[in-house]
Amino acid sequence: VEVARRACAAFISLYRKDVWRDAHVVNLMSAGLVHPDVKLSAALAHLFLGNKTKGLEGILEESEDEAPEEAAEVANDIVGAKKTARREKRLKRAKQAAHRAKTKRSRKEEESGHISFVAIDLLHDSQTLAERLLQRIAKSGEPFLFRLLLMHLTSRLVSRHMLVIPNLYPFLLKYLNPTQHEVTQVLACLVEASHDQVPPDDLKPVVLHVIKNFVTEVNAPEVIEVGLNAIREVCARAVNILTEEELADLVGFRKFKNKGVAMAARSLINTYRDIDPQLLHRSLRGKQATMAISRGEVKAPEFGSRHIADGIEGLEMLAKRRRTGEGSGDEAPGEVDTKQMVMDEVLSSEDFKKLRKLR
Image (cartoon, rainbow, N blue to C red; front, top):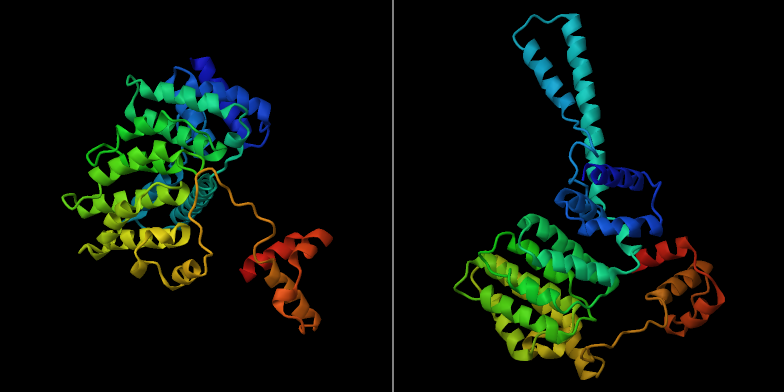
């Protein structure tokens, strides 16, 4: 086990230094996710999640807390003592060392806060890996927080590779109770494991379970708010989850006395104004959605259907900007043939920057 841990530590160190970042090495090390050693598997799970690796203490990273402690010790020694040039120089050096250590630590935290999906995107057989991880999570012999970490990784695999694992959602349902330890993390796993290719029949029982156990007036306002936010995120990612009656019951919480619950219900209304306003009551659809429905421009989302873009969103604004910049703004914006523009030229990075600003 010690040899395996040190090999894992060497791989993680080389991966972070951009030495070993090819698909072959990443797929070899993915086998360590099902290794019986919990610390080794947790370290690799943190790596594939893009988090800061914390599983192999004493091997991967050294403590940098000595400098602040030294500065505090020097300051305590000087307080109450006679000030001399030597003591002031010593305190100045200690403060500089503490400042350097703090800057280095904040830089590391900033880098670790940036989530990288490179490793998880290089996996060849993500379906088999996710199923093996789910089998391991289902065994109750390992610590719950470790299984929760693997649960996050399984959900991330489902999200990034658009996998369909029907057994994942009944398993998550067992832990979706307001009294469950780290229930918000389990709800985050449910949200991340939702996408438009998951059959509604797999997700709907879990969402109804959340409605029954979280979004009821007998629960605390914080529990209702968490349940509403989780349902909103699932419905924004998947399709055909709620019926008109179920949605009407949920948006009724917009008049709840607690401000957080009311805001969560309004967020759900705003989400459905974008994805399927026909399920909302007429008074809740909003002006734009009502006009779009009256013109017949709104189509209810269907499972398995995908929108194929035939152009670049906002390209007509860039074309209009170019024409006004050239001084020939006599043509209307609608007459600009954006499709011809896409066919004739290759947009540069500067064009895309301008396009993002115009949007």
